[in-house]
Length: 163
Ligand SMILES: Cc1cc2nc3c(=O)[nH]c(=O)nc-3n(C[C@H](O)[C@H](O)[C@H](O)COP(=O)(O)O)c2cc1C
Image (cartoon, rainbow, N blue to C red):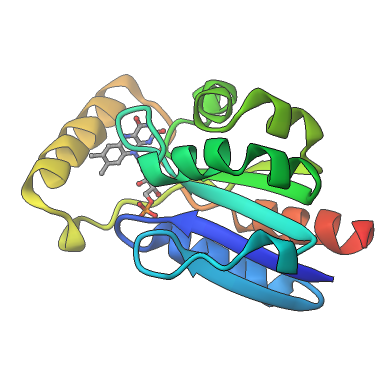
């Protein structure tokens, strides 16, 4: 089984999750950062896992466009989708808004990898928003965003058991 993990990450959290996913998958797996790597042809792969982080309710535009542009080819693959974010309560809407419905229906798994803020690396505007979000979460007693590594393992197990 040959797998491609295609992801987008602004400050590295999703990139780390994708690398952890690769570590736990059986068979040959290629990690592809949509912002910096050349995307290989899909015909080499039988499993494709796609994901990214959410900023102001949206996944990376290139991820969205890629799925739409390759809809027919992707329909014939084993599929999985993942999202990293800070608000698990709206995860269903994030999935619906990020990936085509026909692909979501066909997917073997949809996983929320949780989230992490990395303010040291952030550009000014993102740092400003993240401070506001953190303050408002503290005020409302909302649970803090956290990584969910157990969901990475669950996704790897689902894919490994399918092959
Ligand atoms: C400016 C900013 C906006 C964000 N907007 C959202 C959001 O709308 N919903 C959400 O659930 N998480 C939001 N997050 C949390 C990110 O999705 C989370 O920090 C994620 O782990 C970032 O992953 P990355 O480093 O791979 O980009 C936001 C974070 C920042 C810094």
